[in-house]
Image (cartoon, rainbow, N blue to C red; front, side, top):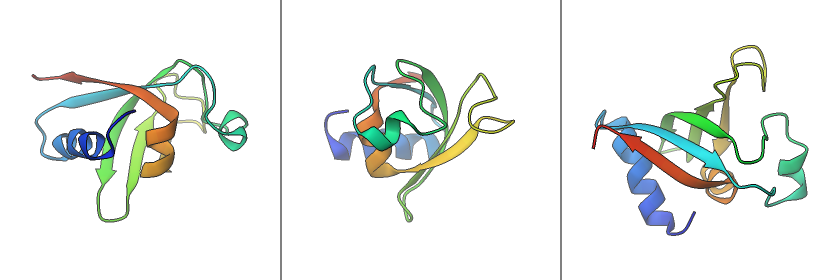
Length: 93
């Protein structure tokens, strides 16, 4: 993702209820720790469920529902989200 402020603004729009967001991962893991993470699937789309701006945490869901865990829901720090995802798609606009 490019501009940190732009990404933050788009995530903020999710909390205002004006859009539904889907984010897709980059094809190559930006860091070794991401490549071995249980949530990482290269070039895969995830539903963005929440953005807690005060804590800087993004909550996502893998639509496959099995990675990580039985429901596919997990949270990432904003910085890792920004590094690991390259596209955000919107609905409602």
